[in-house]
Each structure stands twice: as C-alpha cells, then as structure tokens.
Length: 456
Image (cartoon, rainbow, N blue to C red; front, side, top):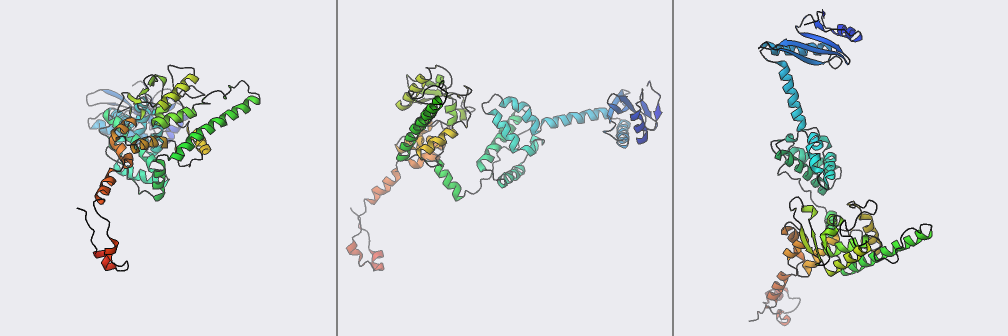
C-alpha cells in the first residue's frame, strides 16, 4: 500500500477531508483496510482485504454524502465479518447487484420498455397496446411481473369500476397485459404467466346498458335504409355547396365538385361497408391490390384475426359494390395499387376515428337516431342475410367470424322461425272449442271442464 496517511475516519474528520481533499488515500486507524480516496466527484469509501485463498481484493462501499461516516463504517465492519468467515464480500455484493438487475428486467416497466416495445413495433396497433398497458397499470410498472396475482386483478377491477370505467374497456386492458405476460413467459423471462386463466368478473347489466346494447346490435328498418341513402345524398349536396362558396370567395383553384359522382371518400366508404359488412379497420386497410373488379372479389387478410389467421380470405362482391368501386377508382385516376381510401392530408392510412365525424353528419342529415352507430351497418349486413334465409355457416364466412358460435350467439334468433311453424302445425290439429258447449260465459266451472275436440 503506497500511502501511510492514517486517522480515525469520524464524521468530523471526513468533513474536513471533503473540504481539503487529500492527495492520497487516508486509512482508518481502527478497521484494517478501510479507507477513503479523493476524486473528482468527492470522497469514496473503500475497503481493501484478502480472501481466504490470499487473493487481494478492493471493494467500493459508496460515496461520502450518499453514505454517512457511521453507515460506511458499519458496512465495512459487516464486510470484514464476511471475510473472517471465509467469504468474499465483493462477490456477495456483485451477486446482489446482478440479482437486482435480473429482478429489474422482470419488472413490467423493463419488459414493456424493452423487448415488448420491439415486438409491438412490428404490429399495426402496437403503439396503442403499449400505451394502454402503461396507462391502465401505471401503479404496477415497477413490480416484478411474476408476482402479479388474482387478488391484484380483483382490486384493480374494483378501482377501475369506482372511476366509472366501462367493463369492456377494463377487459381490453387486462387482455393486453395478459398477452404481454404470456410473451414474457414464452421467452423464459418469467417462469409462467401468473394471470393465465384469470378473467374479470362481469358486473350485473343495468336496464340502461341492456337498452344501449340492443340499440347498437340491431338491423336497419326499411325506412332507415331509405333515410341512410338520402342522408348520403344530402351530405354530397352539402359538400358541393360548401365548395361552390369557397370557389366564389377566392379559392377558384379548388376542384369543382359538381361534375363528380363522389365529392370525397365518405359515400363510397359507407356504401362499401353497407354492402359488405366489413369491419371499419378492414376498410381503412383495403387496398386496390385486394380488389378484383373483373371477378367481383376481395382477397384480404382480416386484420382483427391476422395474428391467428394470417392467410387472406376471399369475399364475393355484389354488383352494387363493384359499381361503387369502379366509379371511385375511375374518379381517382384508375390506380392499380395503394389504399382505396387514403387520408386526404397524408396519403396514408386514415386514423381509426376518421369516419366518426362524417358518420355523425350523415346520420344528422338522414335524421337517424343518435344510437345508430356506424358499426350497425355490419350488424345490419349479417341480420338481413339471416332473415333472408341464408345459412349461418355462409353468414359466418361473409362476416369473417373465426368461430361460427359468434354468428349463432348474435344472429341465430333472426332465422325464419321454423320452431314456431312446427307448433303452429300442431295447433292446427286441434279444433277450436265449441262456445255453445262451454255453457254460459259467466259459468267458470263449465268453461274449465269443457274439453277440446280433437280432429281425427
């Protein structure tokens, strides 16, 4: 050891050394190997010792200011006790630090910000999934993923309900978290998914909620269909009038809309949804490469189930859809590739909320009820098919349902009522009771005892 400067490293001595940093190490007179070293960042507590095998080791205890004189001396004493028992305190400290790093890597925050961000970056809605987890489980970000439990989920659900969050929103958030945990378990970051098989408890549905659900999952009445088409025409007229006023007010460079079939993407977009029953996401992602106008088909991967069924599906188009797409394509300059309805501002895919305002305007012009959400067009497509007698398997394929049970659950009740026909056929085998044989109308005993006459 090069330096022989020694003193008892008390709080007062360290305060003086901090003011006048020594040029060499200062060793404690009581604990062998315990000393401080001055550096650009101040004083650092250190410990020099020999292991049982005679290996010389140096261990950094911490910085003065972060540790007090008493804390540093206590840590040095504990380390020397480990040495006396034949251990290596530096190895113990390094293992503790390594374990802390391993534990940090298993926290929700570390996995979310690290490997899972890379994975979700490859997905269309990956950013939304990451944001949903960060917001919904902000209090859990620094917890080890493997320690999450059913009790945590029950408390979390109660807190979300108290804030007025809808059950479906909480369910989506939990689903996103469980997907992350399954991914971490699959890659052996955690032993297993601690929330596998755990689901939220569905609260009792109120009468208001049941009424709202019924209004959303329904078909359009004939007069509503007529109103919808009138609303689309009114929307187009409104846009033409707005454009005329703009051109008169000094914006003559804007294209004239009077001679075009569609003033913008809104009418063709809604018509395509009406005639195909496609989900909005699949319409936002619809490309001309997917469309075959010659054969009247759309060949496309369904976005909602792409992670389970990455192969494209083929959907037949009615003549109405083909006509809409032909006109829209011609109006767009007959593109062979690219999005069918790109964003006017960016030329890229429209935001998932891009059709909310246009739909609200069309609905207003059509004088349709505010409860008629745009997704009702999809429900109407399936409902009308079922009521027309199309078999449920065909409807399931046209709706791109991954499981026909979904179709059965939501639309089977609309089938032509064969069961009612059966009981009516039975009823026709029974003759109407002869009112003359039933006695006086006020004679209750006679009314009860009079038998039906069965036709043989």
